Image: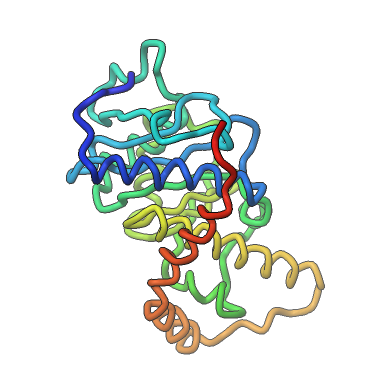
Amino acid sequence: MNVQTSVTPDVAALRRDLSDAFRICHQFGWSESVGNHFSAAASGDGAQFLLNPKWQHFATIGPDDLLLLDSRNAAATTGPDAPDASAWCIHGTIHRRRPEARVVLHCHSPYATALACLKDPTVVPIDNNTARFYGRTAYDLSFGGIADAAEEGERIAEAIGTKAVLVMGNHGVTVVGETVADAFEDLYFFERAAQTLILAKSSGDPLAILSDAVAQNTADGWRDYQGMAARHFDFLRSQLPSLN
């Protein structure tokens, strides 16, 4: 159900940002057929949120394609514009349970997914990018298949808690943030961090893990670089081809 309300300039800008995030994700090779989902809260309480339509390819999504849904309205799961069941289950629940999670990005990027498939997918701090997520990562290792049941959404929302990243065991990764640019920057750096970990582990040699103090200092140091997210996102969107 596409809830059409009067669109404020802020929501219009949010539509542009989120639709660009889908297309950038595809440019990086992180889209997967016509699945996976990004969402963004369109109301202060997080109840109303934007979500990609069911089974529309990331490369084709424009601002006006996004559904505006209300996480408290179960009727949104019926009708011709009903969202994908797993998208409603995960994103609807997170927006309802965590209004501060303004943007929720979920995908199966290659290295993050490979990391999630390890028996121990812990992101250990071995460089700047892995240390970026020190103390910011949660884990859900109770994979039960495609997440399309209400209790699955509740468990995932509970698992992510107040963290920025949820490693979903045997599944993929979900990142939350205050803005589309902030969330996408964490998604970008998490994929880089996962790549470093997978490559380092593949060598078979012991990892040189940073001390807790150094890891925390590095994570704290990233706060001074928050402005990178908007600049990086602006550059990435400038490289996108025009929608036909």
